Image (cartoon, rainbow, N blue to C red; front, side, top):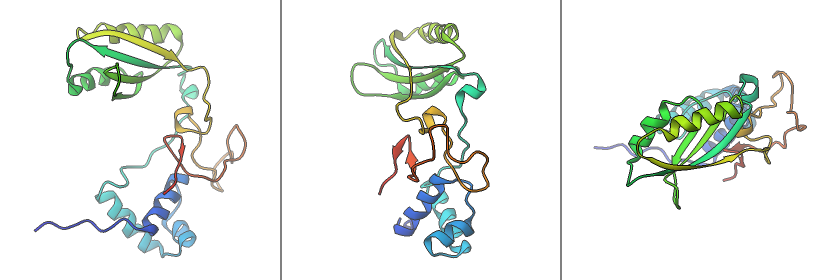
Length: 186
């Protein structure tokens, strides 16, 4: 007999929104904000983790602070039908690839690449092109981030009291949670 997961309700949505806004918020702080006890919030978070609604917690780091000053998106075109698992093996061997996905359209995959400078990016691109099944690549260098408070730009995801440097370099946050740089709405 299989057990059906508990439904995802409005309180769960509020908990997820609170965690997206400030992943360091305590269960007590979240509970106070949404009208639940800390224990009830913890139970719900544990359930959402078990059901893969919440898949983890992370720190957002400004790439430039780590020396990654150059950023590009690379369309990858493969000979024949390279299976996604083969592409995944290749991209795992390049620490400069921040994200990779198969896509619709002419390209087979899209890579998000970070490098220390243009020369480093060119070297990464040559390593990718050296794969026998890669037919061609088309690169798009990032000039600026139009959403400077997005995770891709390395923005802080929290302006919670007690954190150093409230707000971000673009001014105070708008108070809206974001997922993949987009406003998080239900």
